[in-house]
Amino acid sequence: MSLLQLMGVTKRFGGLVAVNDVSLEIASGQLVGIVGPNGSGKTTLFNVISGVFFPEEGRVFFDGQDITRLPSYKRAPMGIGRTFQIPRPFGSATVRENVAVGAMFGTLGHQLNVNKSLKIADDIIEKVGLADHRNKLAGMLTPVEKKLMEIARALAMKPKLLMMDEAMAGMHPNDIDQMVNFIKKITQEESLAVVAMVEHIMRAVTGMAEKVIVLHQGSKLVDAPTKEALQDERVMEVYFGKSVEAL
Amino acid sequence: MRKKYLPIIPVIIAYLVLFLVGKNVSGTWQLVATLLFYCALGQAFNIFMGMTGYVDFGYVAFMGMGTYGMALGITRFVFLQEYGAVIIVIGFLLALLMSTLLSIAVGAVALRLRGAYFAIATIGVNEGFRFLIEGARIWNGSEGIIFMSQLNDILGRDAASALSTFWADVMVLVIAFLAALTTLLFMRSKIGYALTALREDEDAAKVMGINVTKYKIIAFITSACFAGSLGAASWALKTPYVFPPEVFEIHYTIEAIIIVLLGGAGTLLGPVAGGLIYGISKYYLSIFIPGFQLLIFAPIIIVIIVLFPQGVVGMLRDYTKNTVVGRFIV
Image 1 (cartoon, chains in turn blue, cyan):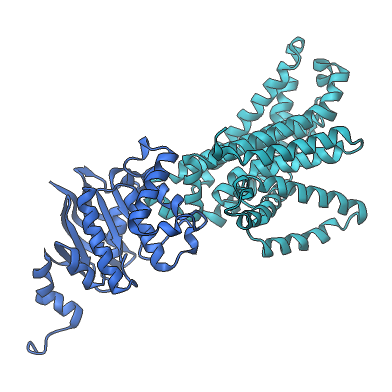
Image 2 (image 1 turned 180 degrees about the vertical axis):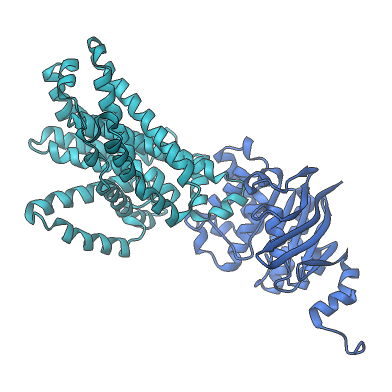
């Protein structure tokens, strides 16, 4: 059974159709890349899945439950975690406290007290390589560190579905490779099911995604295994324009 | 006591020193009582404004409700006078009940709004309530309630006078301390983490699984309860009468905001520092240049808030970080 299923989801902002009749399925443990040019509706799709917006049409199922109209704070304990395109740290709290908040209100939240959550936070901070910044205020981190912290915060929630919104934009290529390896590793270790991600950076997509979903102007263009998808003519056209031979 | 509750020690020391000075240095009790009132006001207001980042301009209405609660407790239950102080307890219970009810009513509507919209929506609460009481002639309307004689009947003349000149202020001290303790307990529990998260970024907090409305309401009601008991102790018991224009005066909300910002919003020690600085400077300014104190005070506050946006305690906390002293300052 698929972990996440979208059926004919449409989200409009006034006259603008940001996500147009998108259906997709993501299985447990699958690494999925969601790509598309700017304005193709990737972030809106994330917002619909995490409950920031409700869709006008269509349904969203998670873990067998219809969550189309479920408020976002109820989705996190079910196992939906995410990061933001522009990091949104809780600036006046330390990195450690930020990550602990993830543990406290995530899937295991009801059985974790503050001390246990802080312990989990320490563990994960170590893993993402922020140990030196543990007691810094999150607002004082560099942009890349903020992104790492957001990933740590989302991981602390022990999500079944982790959505990363351009988490690697702006990172050094070496760091991207490192991050890709880390995420691959953690998906297996934590049996953290799915990492869906929105990414411009093809290096990251090809490095880890098993399947790629390409969005274009709000609609789903291609949904196929990574290699296949990236060689698809329509995808090439969206990214690079028509090939010379075709003209 | 566990390590994480250490920061309560400076609070205890501050209040203890205040109390001892007022008790032993003759002629200072009135000043100390005023300072205690400001500290308690800041401490109570801080639980909501400091921890959630929302500004409630109608805050004084909760104090007004508390004052009325005590007044009604004393006037309506005067037939129980052989039980004496029990009536005061009933008064406090009524004060708590009434401020809680009002905070639920206000919170249910206004807490759906964010930031400045919340602030604007709450401005009307105290004035609206005042006009409701006066216009609909609830609880004697604009004539208010004077319950000096009932208080004398209940406690006897001497005890009643001791209550209004000394014990009411001690109650304020207790309220200030309890509010500080609650603040620390909140800070060290999930509630505090949730409030910090929602203060910093409400949308991100929601996506992290935090039911922001629930935690805002918890902070709001808790804060309102302390305001209610503060009204009951400091206004009703100290001066045994209640008039609508006095207990719904927006002036006190402004003072609460100043104290919290001055001391450091969301900090434990902030309201103590803010209350003392504000109370002492207001007292001396009104002695040396009566009538001009606000003119002097306004720019001082502007300067402090521009230079130390984190407040006095926020600044101290940053300086003492990673030191032994720092462990006591939150």
